[in-house]
Image (cartoon, rainbow, N blue to C red; front, side):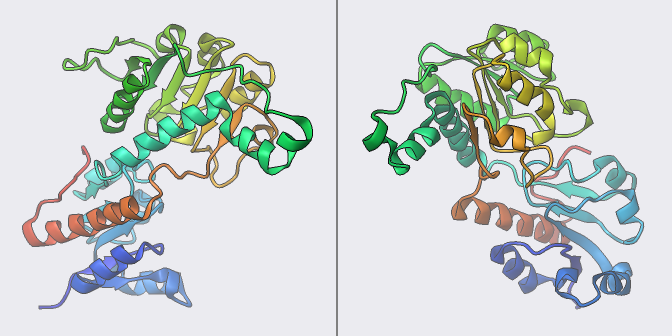
Length: 315
């Protein structure tokens, strides 16, 4: 029996490449001299797609009439129009759970780095200023006594909350609905959450519903001691409003692992102090990324062997 044909539009981790090539016929346009020509040649044979960042929507899918599943690398899948896939009975999968602990660790690390200005303090040492100018200036912010508002209390949000409690932080949250099994105080609006907290942790997914949800009004509600941390999606935060809030000291500082137009980071953010910037490394360890890659393979394998995906997203 011939192997099922899978399309891999962009290069993926070796664990994905090896895993898929053992079980499927994998077509890789990124290796072809004529990528469009290759995709047109195999279009009718493609039944599954291994997705890394590629935009999957009606315009893309019309070229591949026999696709049954799009297996996405990442817990976020705002690059995939799920409604367009559902209209064609295409299953969409993502890679939840396996990156939860890693991202939660990054989130707390980023919060500590931002509040205590640890990146700037290290640079002070490396630049020789400890010797030439004396100790790094005392930080105006501290983690002690803070109230953390979590925007998006899903798997990762709950893991962050658990860690935050261990650091003595009070935890509140906002999401689309109140969760019956959660004891943290719930707020029915993001503005209400920001008004009750001095630290806002963004864990929300991207997409039209959350686009620029963190705006100038929300930032002002955090107050002059406020800290914003974003490890969700860059589009959730209005970067222009954030830069203005930081420049005018409307809030104290920010720590960002994600940006609106990655890998571009606005010069306005780069120029500011009290800002910690990371290059989207929330889940970026070998162990975690390999586990995510294996789940991409497992979803495709399970679908074509059993007709069921391991981690389908809601249709």
